[in-house]
Length: 342
Image (spheres, helix red, strand yellow):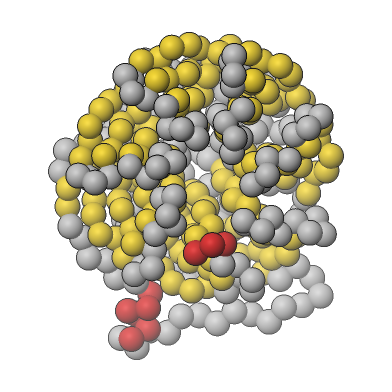
């Protein structure tokens, strides 16, 4: 494993050198379509790998969604349940995260090898950080200062300073890390899924070194970490289960049987409820985290993957469907109350 210090070129630097960022087209009576920085018409770098992503702003007014097969992202207004904007100009958008207390959101793109920053209020393009082709899953540190970025092509994780808009470190020694990456609640560790080898790699943030590898998974997909950092949950699409892992020892203590081809394993903020999305069954398995029992299976979804997001008071969970519609789940009675679509 190697730690590399890097310097990246942001679009802000390009503007200083005489290349200006594109302007945003004026809105019309139809849903506005906004162009990102122009990209050459190139083949998808890793188009055979399919994923989607959903991020919800802290104030729960905005949702941003993507599908890697589409060269655009959609922005929904959660207040009125309508599509607000469509932003085009991507290669293979992979993951979305809100940063700077929700005032901006970031989109990783594995074909372009970039992180694109947008203003949440008006969806305007702000900046672009180059992290290399293969950029995939992202995780924001608990203090909001750092963005960790998986790179499945280079089998590395990049540490990005959000305020400075630059990559500061690259750590190698992984095996095709894709969407699954999660910073621990105390910010001291980062858990990274490796699609090749079916393992989770643990990074010690202070030393920026790999300190443990946890194996025993089967086609590992989404992961979540408990609020106390003591338990990790990992979806196994290869054996239709969610593994429960003791993060202190790295041992899998239990496999929870769920539906067919589980991708997501999303834990509520209080750590009491786990939602496992079953892609083939079009269902969500609801797990009581206190005893790891499946208490309900909810149907009515369309190929749900890893994109499941709880709001802060955990009264609602948002689930992304294949058609990029969002199912709004009432957590108290575990029912779908609304579907937001284009």
